[in-house]
Image 1 (cartoon, rainbow, N blue to C red):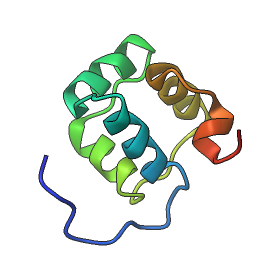
Image 2: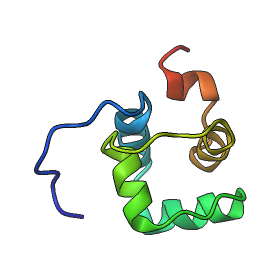
Image 3: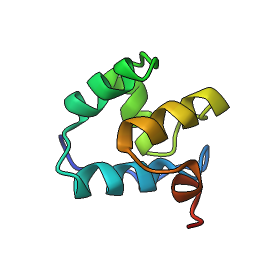
Length: 81
């Protein structure tokens, strides 16, 4: 994946956490997309990139699938532990 050229946006608060958790687990975007699909969320690579860059809104049902795919709690994605 190419490094991001622009600073993060302001459309969500989980994008940077999703990226950090995914990378900490050694997970590529392609693998994460497959996990999301298994969790019932089918989004495109572009959509995921925009989500991680905070340039895309995140729906409540997407938040649950993302947490499941990353094996973390929704609270962890939102910044509380």
